Length: 79
Image (cartoon, helix red, strand yellow):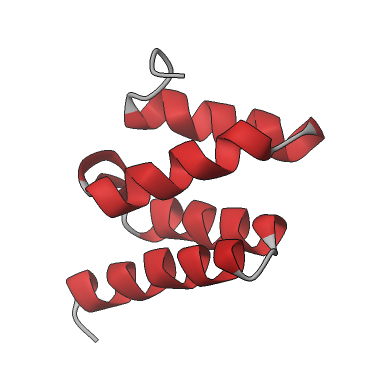
């Protein structure tokens, strides 16, 4: 698959996990997206919305990981 299709898959997977009540799986999908396609998380509104959604309810280690990702994505000052 092309890069845009693979990155879209991981973000969509993250949203699916989130909507199904599996925030840890959603966060893992988003972190995988960043590892494979860093620009997607920084530039794609759907990925940024998922990140913002997840970090609002995260706790512990997952909250720290998402806070660091938000900083890298430029969201640290928005929430």
